[in-house]
Amino acid sequence: MAMMKNVMVEMTSYIQAAGTEETLTVTIHVKGEYGYRDGKHFLSFEEREEEYPSAHTKTRIIVSGKELTVQKKGTTTYDMRVYPEKNIPFTHKTPYGIFSFSVKGNTVSCEASEEAFILSAEYEIWDNVSVVSRNELKLHAIFEP
Image 1 (cartoon, rainbow, N blue to C red):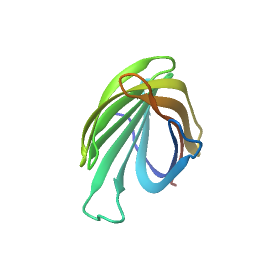
Image 2 (cartoon, helix red, strand yellow; image 1 turned 60 degrees about the vertical axis):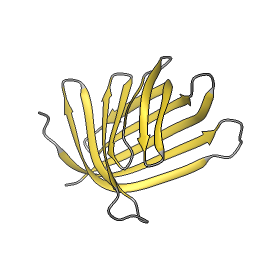
Image 3 (cartoon, rainbow, N blue to C red; image 1 turned 180 degrees about the vertical axis):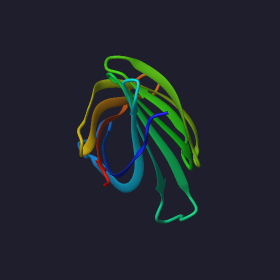
């Protein structure tokens, strides 16, 4: 297993619903853990909802080459893989129901230094026939001393 480092994570998601000009921006700040092994970057953290203190979601992010995997388990659950120019199906379970989508990756890039891990991804969420949303993910994980 990779040696894990404690990190402070800032993750911002930009979501533009199809047919609109407006972009929803969601930013979280959480403590997490980062590791690197066999050419893969691993990042894990837990998200909590302010309105519902008992609600939480464990998030694990894996980056291998150009492929991004986002695994969430808790209040919302899914295993989403983003790979440029591929349309990959996934199931999203929420308190409101279970939804089937696919994700088409546009770009996935990351870099790691002695101080931080930085991830950027652009992708589209599709239902069976059309784009539901265009999304951009920016993540910056600063290694703690």
